[in-house]
Length: 576
Image (cartoon, rainbow, N blue to C red):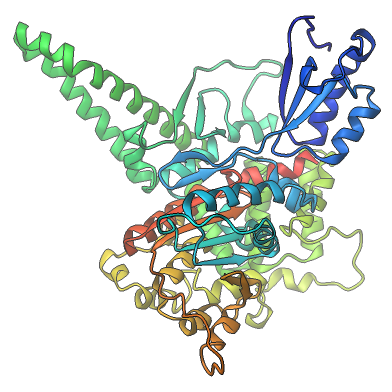
């Protein structure tokens, strides 16, 4: 393929900072080196420009020179800021950051994220305290400090605290199937910059299914009607009403809206001529617009119901995995879903959830990998190594000298908890645990009255980590109380006035202080929180944080490099 060229035109290409994309573009531009004379030495007057988002790495210049395009093509970088997707939802729209950090161990994208966060600090003010959880979160806080202090705003900071979390600290929130409307939309449809494409013929579930189970004629690609839903409550009042509701409730509300609109439009038959003119001029355009939105959501919900026909069985299986119920049966059910449902990503996702919650031994992984590759092809064997790199699976070994087959038939004893189980029990994330309901009610008395908690996003099975940390930060009255709740969690770090502490060390300075120490930042004076998830947030944790905010009378803004579903995390392993 050759790029079009005109002598009097300047060509500008904007690409993501990905090596494969950049090399592909250079290969297409190489013939230009033979055709275009190198007359101008002024880089500003070059005919070809490449803008790399968000960064232009040093080796990009080296590759440009090796391709013989130095002096002909000028490189630029553009680090855009947070994009407003919806009320309380911000995104940098950098979908390859998870892949770079967790699959490739490539941290070159972090400085660009730090620059965006620093600009946010310049606009909104520096928070009183920052809580980070995970190695990349700690690095991000260090980068923010290395960039220097920001100018002091004339008004108080918009956020009292920032919470920065690594995606791998709470994989469960992504791997579990959400129960809310917005979350299930993302499970089925592709999201791009806050918009989903509704296609009757093609979606995420259809595209990952084994071709044999798709029921399509080979070589024939059906063409369906496509439409777009913008996931913004200000632009779509229907979405704003149902976005964080349970899917069954949201679907019922959409059907009720359809009936109500039908009755409203029937009133036209009973109107007089003058009344009809006024109705058509004033009300009918709004009703027509509302009807179009309602029908879009009706179509989307029907496709979701069709694609997730085994939803109840899936929810029951996930709950058993969280509670480590009958390990052998869990493995049998996952294998059965692999052969009957044939979903390339979601079946792997269930197996990753099982490893995260209860641990998977090498023999179990080898058996599953063998069945998976027999079904989808042995070219996918490397995917298991990629998932192991991300911490979603153990390493795939060729043989094992010590037999551990006995573990396949027994649940892990309580003293052999996985890291996820230990942290989930300490933070009371598993609502099915014995004292979780009592602990949540004690920390938030209003939960007793509302008969609900943030776990509603997963049908009452699990509270997203981000929501629980927000609840702890908002309900903590002093440093000692925070230390009692978080001291046992490894990797948590507080940053106060540029100093790094663990929750325990921060509290200890107030107990027997021999010198003057700064006053305790708890309870937070400013009850607005900013949550940033490194590696992609999901709508389940966004909805859970929104619930905590409403319950506490606070405001919580959730931001990330992208908004991803669980299948998107698994799909990233297939790109390498």
